[in-house]
Image 1 (tube, helix red, strand yellow):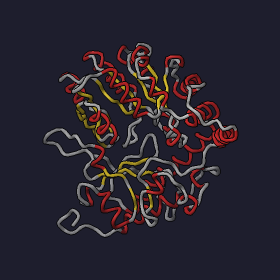
Image 2: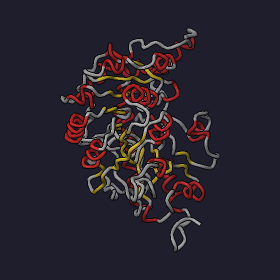
Image 3: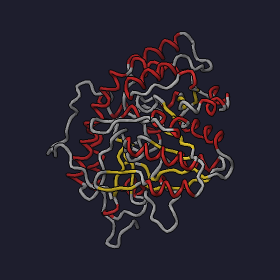
Amino acid sequence: MPTSHTSRTTPATPATPTCAKSPLTHYTLAQLRRRRSVKWTEFPPDVLPMRIAEMDTPLAEPIADALARAVSDGDTGYATPGRLPELFAAFAGRRYGWHPAAQAMRIAPDVMSGIVEILRVTTGPGDAVVVNTPGYPPYFTQLDRIGLRVVSSPLLSGPDGYRLDLDRLEHAFTAGAKAFLLCNPHNPTGTVFTPDELSSVAELAERHDVQVVADEILAPLVHPGPRRHVAFPSLDRPAAARSVALVSASKAWNLAGLKAALIVPGPEARATVAATDDELAEASGLFGVLASEVAFADGEPWLDELLRALDDNRHLLADELGRRLPRVRHQLPDAGFTSWLDFRELRLAEDPAAQILRTARVGVSSGPRYSPHSPPGEASPGHGFVRLNFATRPDLVVEAVRRMATAPAPSDGGGTR
């Protein structure tokens, strides 16, 4: 079971970010409420929105300048890959020590559409695809849409965080799974899997001829600490060489609406990626390509400022939960800007998000949506959990926890009436 995190400090008053140039304090709440994106329009104005994985930051200045130039030039046509593959390859070399082949990459509108396309190429109707639970909700809906059968493999949880259950994976692979959809860093828990875990996955995939598809969208957002991102295709194993990774600048630089991602093959997966549909690239956004080129080439100083601010906020959230909601258990995430919060001790029913929205006016993600295919006879890994996005102003993180802590408690019988 996840345990409450022991954070760096427990302040008596809300902490302020230590990063003087924090991108998370650039906008006031009133300015954020003028946004037209999903995060700021899906709830009524009295709700603090902390559900959708968008960040409350300005664009990095080099990205904003590039997009302004494109608008000034009327450069709003269809996308080409441009220099995006080679710029990502250079970024991956600097940040992860991974040197993928730029000429073998293809662009896609987003990571999810790239995942669907690679699975379309490598599997057939009715094939089983293993997904760790809790898992990103579109995995389940989109794989079902293309006729694949999702096999859930729950993560192990304990005092040291979440880990891959290698015995479960082996059982699923032995039973005939054709592919494994690996999310690393993991959404929603923020776990960065260790090199030993990934090597074990590769060994199992080799033994059972399983295609590994790696969602690595959160890789640029690994926080300070012992964990380091290891790109799955960079492992020196045959299964890694024929794996495919999906990457994007969209999460780390807040570009999700601009539509650009990369499909990156391992050394032996180039034919797999070459077999993807050309229309996938044609559906990508030119602004997404332009913004992503600048992000990978010139966006690292901004990214480093952001990571310092997110590090402050993840500790601030831990402090506030420990002070106001000590029975809510969680792990400090290794990566990303969401926390996976366990409300089961408060007995707010299987989906605490509904009661939190109704009584506390905080919008968080529903935990059960992250594990709709639980193994028979087992409790869902998402029941009693919520995901909270902390990539916002520190004072709004404090206010969200305050609201949740002062919400009416459930009745003595537990659950929501």
